[in-house]
Length: 153
Length: 153
Image (cartoon, each protein chain N blue to C red):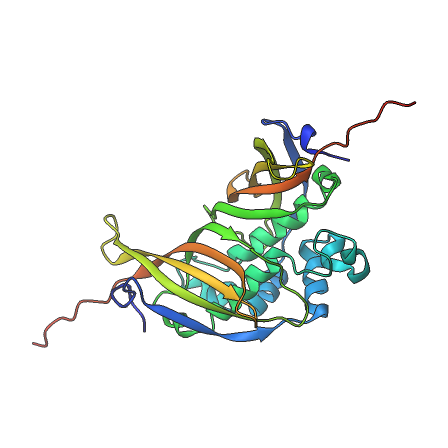
């Protein structure tokens, strides 16, 4: 189990990787972001993306799936995001790209209202197989503190 | 067609609505956010969510699909988000919730490097059927300026 106390600023976690197919890109986009540069390889060539590109929401959701299967999945009360800031997609995700993410602890802050919890700010960075950044964000998660051990009587 | 010049601060757009099913919530979460409070109605009852809740990434992606089918889909060069800030989920999306979104133009800024484009900052707010906010974010989009008309010779 990972508790608030374990998430020291500077600590890093690394996820596994996932290779995204053209089919996955098109299927996600048809459901959630049906714009031609995400759904139609031909039309995408004539767009600002110069070829099929995954919806940014797909890149971000896929990163979530990578994060939930890395060591951070052991956070005691689950990975509960309070919000997202500074989410950027410096370059598009392309069919065949292999994505993986790194999570860095930025800051810890104990809750004043709920002494059993704290807020931990993280930066997620998602790279492709060429180590180019395809997504970055900052998030704050709500994390349980390690239970105090009562001395044995 | 909607151009930069049409996106005056204060202008609002309203999307259609979508009713989300338990199956949709579980299917999205299994793929992108497989935590018990998003995938298992029984386990979710014992969690901080006190019942099944959609992944925040699902609520946000669903909002994208609503935005791409509202009047804003007519933005000349497509809806190209440069980034997302201040994304929050003040309350969870539940099975059976009917979501719709409102988009408000916050700010316009002409591009200094590319005179045919500008940046428009928008706030998206997603409500459930009880008019409670389930998601809010701010985004900047990259928008073509209206082409200058050349006088006929």
